[in-house]
Length: 139
Image 1 (cartoon, rainbow, N blue to C red):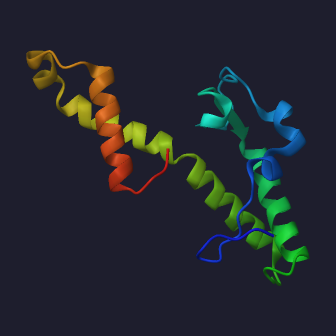
Image 2: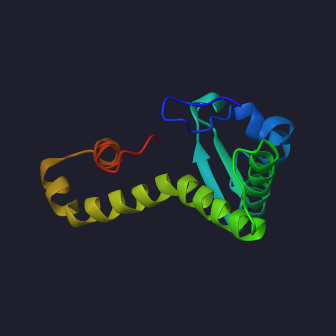
């Protein structure tokens, strides 16, 4: 099992998504379902939609593989599955939370932006990059 400098387990994208990617990737929103949308350079800027059920499945599989490899031990696998799934959902939804914060910030400065003729998309990108740096997020 691959590890990084700080002894964290490192999974390759193909190990996680593997042969399931055709069933979970969508290039358009899937209505008003509970889903998490992320962007990744591997898919040339196209969005990926992960349902919360699939994230739960990934969490269960991750825990199962880590226990089988004796990387971790647990007496309560169900509780661990829930915690891992919650952490995955939290991480996958980080960009959405940053985008929401950018919208709030730009809304507060909309009058100044109108007066100076600032471009909303350009300012959105700048503020988003600044917040990502502040939160040490990799987007």
